[in-house]
Structures are given as C-alpha cells and as structure tokens.
Image 1: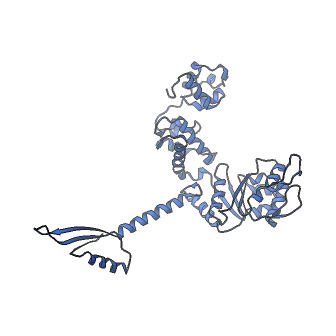
Image 2: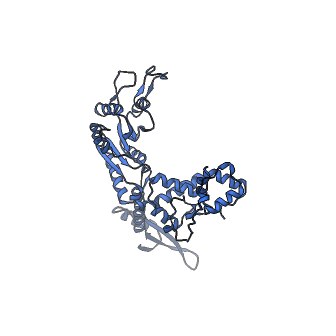
Image 3: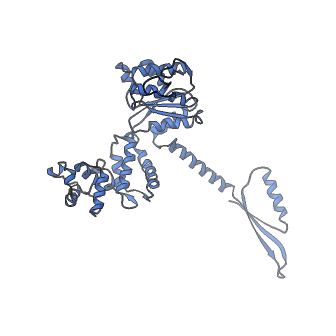
Length: 395
C-alpha cells in the first residue's frame, strides 16, 4: 500500500487530485486529516494522509470469489462433495441443465439419486415449474397407472371423482421416476408412448392430452441386464438413457466423508438443539474404514445414532453403531469382549428387570444397540428402562 502525504491549507486540492486519478481508473483509498496550528493556536494548514487500498480491496474480492467457487464445487443442489468422481457428477449435472434430454441416474440405494434429480431441475430452464417425484416400486401396477396418468370418475371401483395424474401435475416442469426398473411391461408400454408422443390418456378415458415435461429416471439395478433378460423393453431403455449419470457409492468417494460428517453434525445440532463440535480421530478413522453398504443414508443414520449416545461436545467411537466399530480402527484400546453363549441367546423382554439389564449392559460393553438386539426390543426402550431404574448411561 502507498501513502501519499500532502501539506495543504485547502482540502479542495485533494478532491481535484482524487478526481483526476479517478478519471483514469477506480481507486480505493482511506483518508486521515490533522489540523496544524502555530504557537498562537491559529490554524495554518492541514496534513492529510491518503492510503491506497486498491491492493487490499482486490485481495478481498479474490478471497470472496474463491470462497464462492469453493461453495459451488463442494455443493450443488444439496449434494455435498469434493472428490474427483463427484466433481465429474457435478459436471454432468451442469451439462444436463442446458438440455431437455431424458436423464437416467444409476446408483446404489442410498447414494442420493433423488438429490441429483432435484439438482438437475433446480438449475435448468424448468426450475420455476414443478418437480414431481414418484417411487415406482412402492405401488402396484394399477395404482401406479392411476398415479401417473390420472383417472376419470367411474374408471374403476373407488374412483368417485376425476383425478389428474403425476404427468399432468408436472406439465411444464420435471417428473422424476425413481426405481424405474420395477415397472411392469404394461407400464413400460405406456411410458414409451409418453416419451414418443408427449401425450397421455387418463385411465377410463380415450382423450389424448398433450404434456410438456422432462423425464428423469433412476434405478439401483443394472437395467441393461434386465433388457438382456427380456424383463425390460430395449426401446424404452434407450429412450430413457439419453443422458446417463452414474452416481458412485460412498466407498468410492471416501474423501467426502469428513465433509459429509460435518454437514450432518450441523443438521443434527439444529434438530436437537445440541452443540456437538465435531468427531474425534478414532471415530473418523472408523467411518473411513467402514464399507458403507447403505451409503449416505447409512451415514446419516450413524450420525443420528451418535447424537443419541453422545454425552459431550464431541463424538467418540463408543457413540457409533456397533457394526461400524472395528478392533483395527480402535487405537484408544477399547477391549473387544467375547459375549458368553448364554448371553447371546435372546432374552424375553417380559423377564427383564434392573439387575438383568445391568448385567446385559456389562456383557455388551454398555452398547445399548447390542443390548436392544439381544432383548428383542428397540434401543429407545432400553433407554427408557435405564432412566426408569436410574441406571447411568455409561459405567
């Protein structure tokens, strides 16, 4: 930064100087002034110091831009990631936003396929129109047909009034069909007609209705293998996978786990009004070593489980679900104790009393989830009985 010191008795000169500089380029400055008096206390001049803040301002702008870009890189439509494989997913999501092509998302259960669909919709041209979601595996063929296409009054028993379907609800926007691999051949034929002709017919009606929608589908199955087995129409398959996006499982993007853990801790802090600051290194190592068959959904549940057991400001390895804790990931020396065979037998809940519960807790190293499994009740029931009988949460 440059300091310019001027001894003047008229600050108008400084204004003229700054105006002349401003004619050529923008200049950020800070100005300090001090009055100069003689021995008779008469003002004889003013000393003004002008400090050039341009470099400081530019540095701040660059920092803000970097922070903004970092946020864009690590977050997109609620998806949090910094791994290279997920940055590729982000690139595909952004590329798909400029098109109305059908999107096909493939990934294991719990990887966040619905979040990807939401991100695609939220940054696309249809973002101000509705996003309608339906899980195709949750409904029977007849119910799914009615949900997708709607029905008219009297179309079937129980159809007491006309109802529009999800395709019409999504008109102008996006429809997300989750678990598309579960639809029957009959629904496959009807969906193919929607993709080809952009029109639907309500159940019990022959009138064709034009719709303007973008279709996003997802599955945790290998749809190509279903095509090869004759269980899924090949023409529909290629219509759906115009723009495929593969969503990697959590075990293939473990560098995202610390970022996700911090995010879920913040969420649970807000939900439970607690102030957990973070997770200790042994616990984080256990999370990194775990294969995560349930993917991000399982990680969310693991952090919620830890919040139930956590007694302080930090999550420790004893707070994690028992299936995540491994001896090789436990550097703090917690001894793995063999549960006696008679304890492994499931106890009847009605025979449980305070002494038996304390014995069980000791046998299971005070792991409430393991005690609940052995007794055959929920973990919440164990906590309630511990509270009822004044049993401490830790030994």
